[in-house]
Image 1 (cartoon, rainbow, N blue to C red):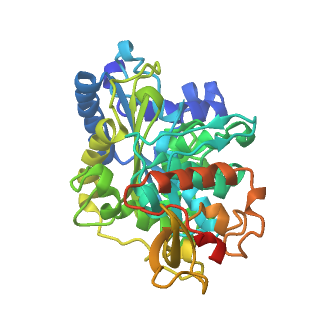
Image 2: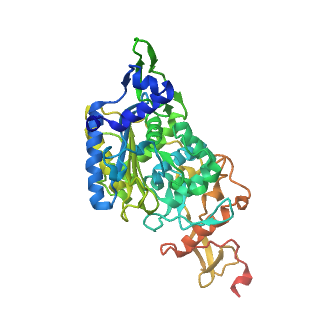
Image 3: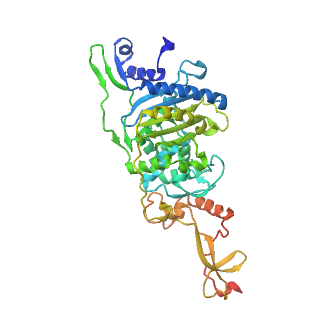
Amino acid sequence: FQENISAPHFVMYVKEYLEKTYGEQAVEQGGLKVYTALDWDKQQIAEKVVKDGADLNTKKYGANNASLVAIDPKNGQILAMVGSKDYFDKTIDGQVNVSIRDRQPGSSFKPYVYLTAFKKGYTPETQLWDVNTNFETADGKTYTPKNYDEKNRGPLQMKNALAMSLNVPAVETLYLAGVKDSVQTARDLGITTLSNPEKLGLSLVLGGGEVKLLDHTNAFATLAAGGIFHNKTAILKIVDAKGNILEEYKNTEGKRVIEEKYVSMLDYVISTNDLRAPVFGNNNPLSFSNRQVAAKTGTTNEWRDGWTMGYTPSLAVGVWAGNNNNSPMAKGADGIYVAAPIWRAFMDQALKNYVTEDFPKYEKEETGKAILDGNLDFIEKIKVCKIKKDKYCLASSDCPDGEEDEKRFFVGHSILYYVDKDDPRGDAPKDPEKDPQFNNWEKAVQKWAKDDKDIKNAEAPTEKCESGDFD
């Protein structure tokens, strides 16, 4: 019998629910008829792509397992659940359903944080700095995140930072959005873990907390539904031996947990291949030529977990790859290599029967604040006179004849100079230094400007020329 069990992890997931709700005896002897939401075609596709992908990963990356969940965003129904590549393989703990285990999500958590920032008034065009930055943590230590390639890209917009999955701007965004509020967003969308946000700190955005693949997929399903949450469900109907209906799935409108306009900002960022291409290349597994698909990968420290999460308006799919015992995969086993091919193989086949749908259109709005609208220029032409080598003063009538010149200077600052983090659309802070992160962020920006070969004059003069300057 064992070998013939179909969709074993899903069956055990349902069985566990029944035992918890109706007791073991009712399940074993009660003659219950259970109708589930499982889509048998999708389940078969899922089992095959997980097995093929995990077998390939074992050879290439030392990752012997994978898990996939597919959910219908319009109602929360679980369409496919593969808990491991082979339920009957004891060597990989095959009976463990990884889709309901806690694992670190890596960068696949970032969309929740950026979404929280959008909700607060930031925009996809908001300018951040990808520069080597020390962050003060709550316990007074410093935290210096690195990008995956250990490079920094200078000034860039939130949409580029998220699509390219850069870590430094992501930590800045988490600070601006707030750890507690970001966790609340994730929980509103469908994450059931992370109950102590205060313990998580700024590493949360890089996947420092733990989530379940099933929840993570349901949260992405909420995004797919434009911000409408549905409880995830495996069961459509349960009938007892006497024909009484014990429970029945009722179609509901769901619960709006976030405004659609913020979700449309996120859809736009994580479904636009041009934004992702500088890091992932043009022909990456997340890019679709014939329909809009939003997707985000994730990789955890020491390559212990690889993720790819994504959705269209009618299908949300999440894939985890790694080892059940949490041992590291081979170096370089990023989510894009170990999870994305499995995810893509499933999407290609599963989406064949779906009409092409578009996400709600992202309409860029002008906030009137240059840094939020993405058009703040950090270089300014200033009229100056030279005092000595590389030292200038602001041009005045005291300049010697013919000495006045117009030069380009760096006048940029970190975002905390221009906005109050909790009220980005309000007035600029009068005293930006009061923000505990300000000095570190500012130092990092100024150092970048000094070191950048294209910026000849890193420090703009602030004093007007006086006759004594030229003695």
